[in-house]
Image (cartoon, rainbow, N blue to C red; front, side, top):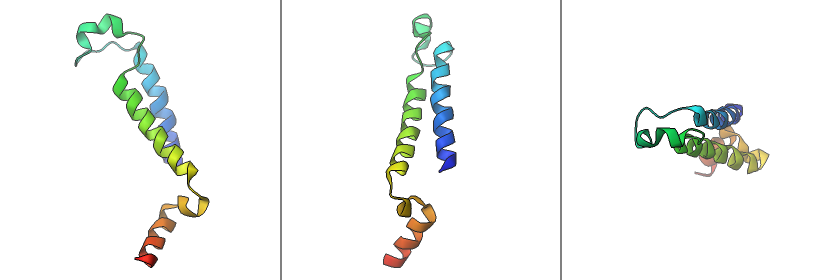
Length: 78
């Protein structure tokens, strides 16, 4: 879980840093000057997806939050 939390923080910070980057490839190239100051939508989307996983995991009851416990319980109950 700690790895997902760290990844979420890094992804969020990194997505915001893309606002200072000028696109070199893709559909944003023709609008490079206008896109400066706006974060890359794909980077923002990925950061939000990772944050959603962390939020979901944090909302689980502690007895279900461990992957090992979830796996063992599923094996027991078939």
